Length: 140
Image (cartoon, rainbow, N blue to C red; front, side):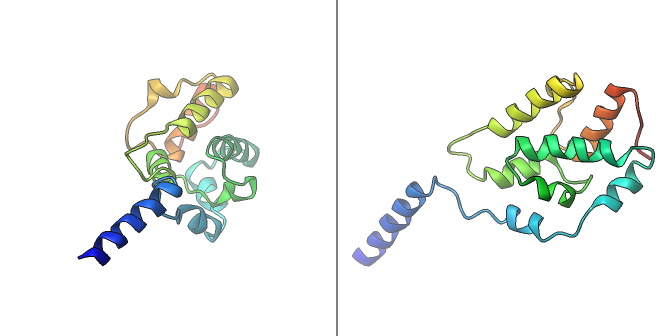
């Protein structure tokens, strides 16, 4: 029985030391995804590559991903899914990435994230709203 208690205490100490989070696999999986530029271009055929890359740069900056990983995200990736993968614990909520994203979208595009937010919002849906705010293109 005492070995069980020691193992539980060791696991709790490890979790507390590492911020109560399990190792993050999202960053590794994104890094090894192939470029998703084709998916973006087929979803938004009238959007310029520059506009897509600019939007993805804003997103990866808000979530502290590497700039080189921006084209590894797909239009159907859910913003909340990415947030939850980055912040898997509910014990210590932290919406810093979403706050940073909301501020960047407001400053860069005049888009209020809280006005369009819903739980299933995808990067493609967000990009479509950015393009509408700029008066440019719509998704197919």
